[in-house]
Length: 96
Image (cartoon, rainbow, N blue to C red):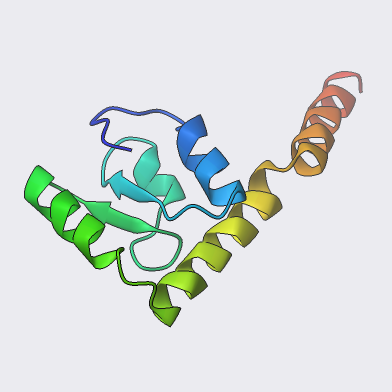
C-alpha cells in the first residue's frame, strides 16, 4: 500500500485476510491498521519500501508470525460477522 493519503485501505485488510504480507506507507488510515513488525511492515520513503521488499524474499519465522498476527487482526475487526454485529448494534442504538 503505497498511497500517502489512504483512508481505510480495503486492499490492506484483504491482504491481511488472505495471508499476504502487508508492506504499507506509515501514513493516513493505514498506520492505524498496520503496526510495524506486528501486523505488517511500514515505510516512510520509497527506499525503505524497497528494502522491506528485499527482506520479504526470505521466508523467516518472524515474517510468518507477523502474517498470522495480521490475519487475526483482520478477522477480529473486519470479518462479516464482526462488521454485521457492529451495524446491528448501531441500528439498535438508533431505534431506542
